[in-house]
Image 1 (cartoon, rainbow, N blue to C red):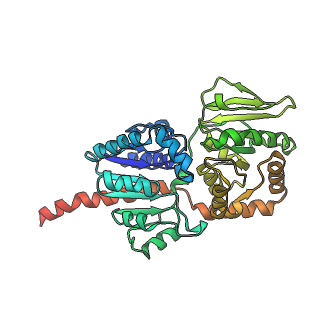
Image 2: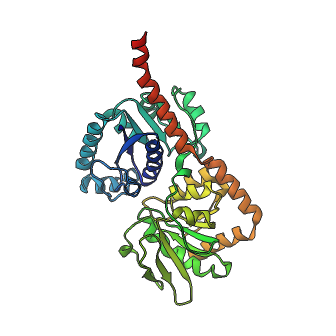
Image 3: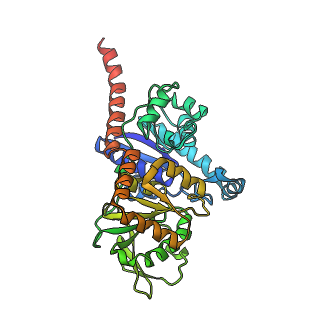
Length: 388
């Protein structure tokens, strides 16, 4: 079996890595993943083997936001965990045909130093649309070691080619291909709740639930796309969390004495997203996926670690009218949803902006095929040399 070692550094990156691994598997490759951040749940759900330690650190992958976050990660064992991950990459690369990195400059650095050649990069984080210089000098120097660099948008490929990275190639954004989950036996349309995969979810979901109480007359079915965080840490006021006995789909109901019922779902994101009319969000990847599929978003900042005011503003610049930002209180959230529902013109502008920012589905298959063709060309070169 032809092996590829895949390196990723973040929950969203793991989801994209799993989508790429699936497409590479269809082309005859065995992918082994080294998730540098978090527990690699997306790979496990997809049946992709993971290597090295997989541990959730206090910063949730956002250590550089503050000195306190850096120190908390160090105290939790970042150095020893990272050394073990580097060893795992090096050992896997000895048996692999190629190294695929999904992430930013840190993951690229790990791949360039400890991975094998050829090196491929899917840079899914940086965007010219948020302003500033999206790729640092260090990152561009590392990119020159790659056989192919796949930016998330066409502007990124043009920008990189003009600055010394001619192998940059835009083939689409695989984020839109990374929808998992089975059917959802609930009547659409849905009001989708996206609290995210970080600690922010414990702050934001209670506010979203209170907004749902104020939106009962909309006839939308409230559905939470829960990313798998431990539910025992969820603190709710007024709502009772009731298990349904199912391990996927609707796994719990959140019931309020006033009659509000919110359905908490797991491993059913595709169905929940495709049936949604509008979404409340404090998420990263899931919000961008929703925008790409034409679902208008109402977001609000949290205390972090992810969906801080700065993160929210950056996401707003990326998604444009697809995202409406409000104050973090139930009244403002409900008002934002009602204003969207009242205006077909606003919803249409939001849908257009989201699709313009995220591109068209099918990128994971296109990128996997491009990697395959590149590797096939490398394999055929020695044979051609011998024939001459």
